[in-house]
Length: 349
Image (spheres, rainbow, N blue to C red):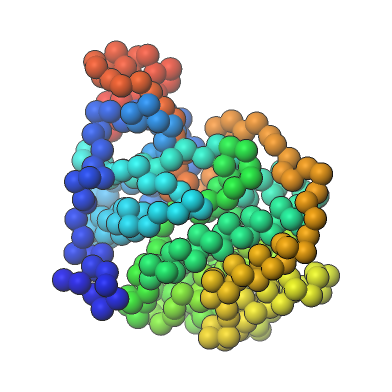
């Protein structure tokens, strides 16, 4: 049954046959990330470099149901939305394990990129261009009624030439019409909007109503990080940062920034969600500011990243799952031997 905004409720969705992959043609290589809900491997599927996100197995029936719902939501949203700044969805399967397959991005995470540059800052043109990529991805999601809810540098990956940013991991994303049933404290504390918290105790699992403007707040914190190349709320733990933002209305300083950028930041992290701009407005503001900048001699420092440089922290396995490639397979056993460290998915799982 169709929902009021024209979408089918995700709970009613089934895996579309056009997105089903043949597990016999899927090969997995080194693990590159692990989180609470999944492990991420390099992989190969039909001559393409891919990322393979394998959901953890659960024995508890209640947890099995939750994990399947999480898997179906991510697959449904990835298949629904396509954009040059969103990771490309390749397919999925439910047996023998729940798996999401996406494109391979070789530039590493934005978090890793920034850490490798410290203490240097990004050129303003590069920082704002990256922010524009993120804003365009979020504009696309919001235009489809989707809230990401976990926007942060870990969930932003770079292309091989490190000139383009793509948003990944829709595992926590939801349709906006369902927010009244959502749980607060979703995402990562340091980048999360204040309205997601209890203003007194930050009680886990509290139900709160919120809208797409939670992503706008998170974007502001990411933009601040891009401009300063420092961890937001330095010197605070994640919980301390969230408490300071929610209860004391504390924000990182925008004092040293050009007036136009300071205005974007302060409007995006405004305490009142209704006072924050939408991403269409943010894209226009960023484009206007970019028009005032002259390109630097060297836009982005190019680095050769290997798989080990792309390992994501445990809290963020994401669809940032990144994988590899192989020839069409006749004998799957022979193909597994010839795949140089990659093994047939069916044999591994």
